[in-house]
Image 1 (cartoon, rainbow, N blue to C red):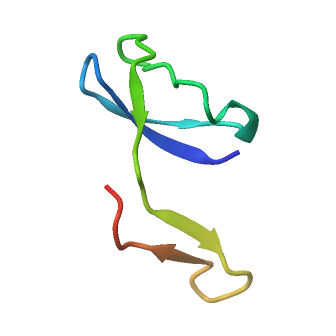
Image 2: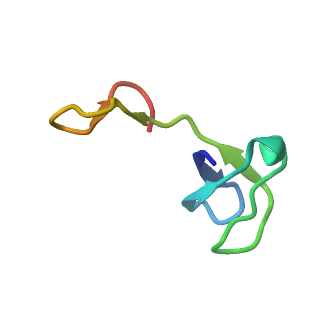
Length: 64
């Protein structure tokens, strides 16, 4: 399951949550105040590249 970053419109907190692809269009519930008035944010990503010496290749441009 992908990890997504959200912003709560009610309490202004940012949070991350795992979301299955089938639930992607549903609003995420804020763990701080319980509101479902949230926006999914753009964020960076990291992908495994097999057996390289670092183990991962991460995109650090763009995102929040």
